[in-house]
Image (cartoon, rainbow, N blue to C red; front, side, top):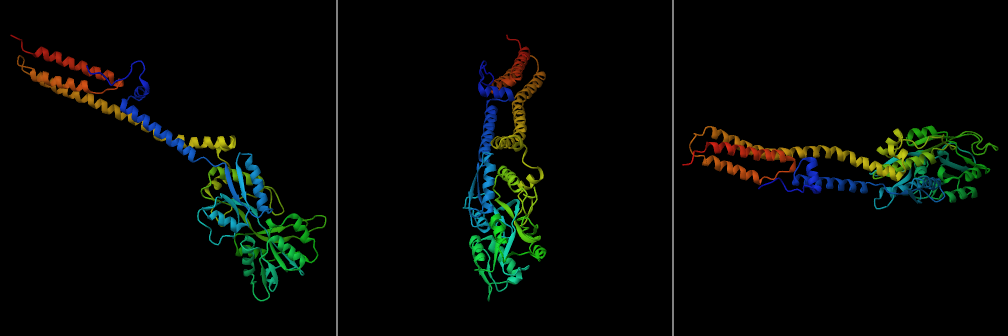
Length: 450
């Protein structure tokens, strides 16, 4: 006797339980399990692959520079989040830019002075500006207020490959000062340039603020005959070069007791951007900007509290993650959970929600399709029985019913071969009962035997 699809009555097993849950047979249960396993495996693989690294590499500046000091402070803040910041010293902005642009070089972020890139490399984005970088020009002898007055002088413009040299040469050329005739450009590093000015070997030096410590600044401004250039054309420079800012060094800000400087001094300087590769994980972008808020948000000689970091675009487009951070801060989970737990929770939510959106409709449709398929098989034989019963009513009583019986036997044999899940047992047995009912009617139509 044919019976519904094999299943253990007392212990149906995993396939039987899945089949009963979704109203499908063994094949349907296998399909649902396979689909679930594939989806779960994909979700796990995504979670593992999308996990943020716990190490960030930053290229900063020369050892002892303000860039290097800022990076060291970032490292202390990030350590509290369980993230290691690997600090790589460099010659400055140009080398930082070269490292970021070179995909073979393992670095994630770096400090880049605006105006360093004539053509910004592809694949780099800004996390925002983190500080002003004032340009300080010191001269010997008579004080000057314009760079054009340096014609015919010996000028230390910064060492080769540095952002200082690139900016200095650009501003000098805009002022009509070129290395020709009596005018000489000397490629010296900051320490050598400072000593050269004190010794009288050069007439002027160009220094970026990150290369000048407070002690050095006081020494230079306190030395007779050495003057800090007060840029009379500061605003004109900022109009010519949009990435320059107009900065003011207030009277007495270096030394209140000695009133150094004796008057407000106007400077120009680019901002410094924290530049990253586009591949930087959003979670790492958030913690870096949070560190920048803590480190760079403090007041100084040239900036107010909370002025940096800022969503200012110059050479590089602001990343979408940074723009979101400036609008609304860190992602929800990172506000209330430790970094590792927030990262895990965020990835689970990112995976599970879309997975449920896809799986729930699929798991709802599959049983319906399967039920339609099984019911269509049952209805097929019901249609065959209805046709047989119509022929039976048109049958002449007393004549042979062999053909009707043969057709009914074929229907019964086909029904016995059907594989029906337990979910459809009621309809299956009802069909068999109806077959017996029709057979009983046919038996009444058989002619009496002689």
